[in-house]
Image (cartoon, helix red, strand yellow):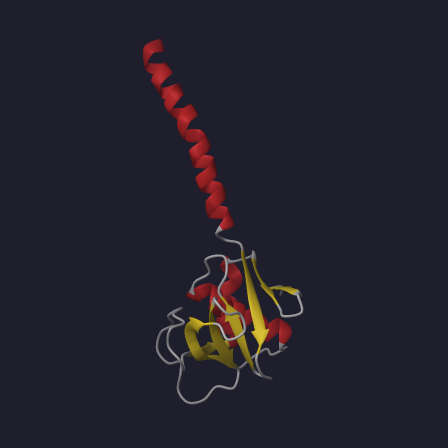
Length: 149
């Protein structure tokens, strides 16, 4: 019995710190601070950071429209799909606008940020944040903006 317990205890002692590191790493991936730059009165750029993907970029756009621009409705549209940032050289970004032109939404939602003209409602973009309580934006003046209510 003792001979069986020693290898099991040894295996646990070796893997426990690794499992703790993996869990800690997974938690850190849920923390995003995305820089945002105002380009025009209704146009802004969300810059990728902390491994953010399309869902986080749309969420960031929703937060920015509601909390910074003060809008409660309407749509958000991609002006310039994911590509080189215009305000932060060497970074990737997506340029969004609240001045929607033409048909951009329709059908189902995909979090892709690689198609110009794609649009979703501000409410939908903001709702994507419900699973990301630690996503926040950093404006050009250094202000941190969180989802809030």
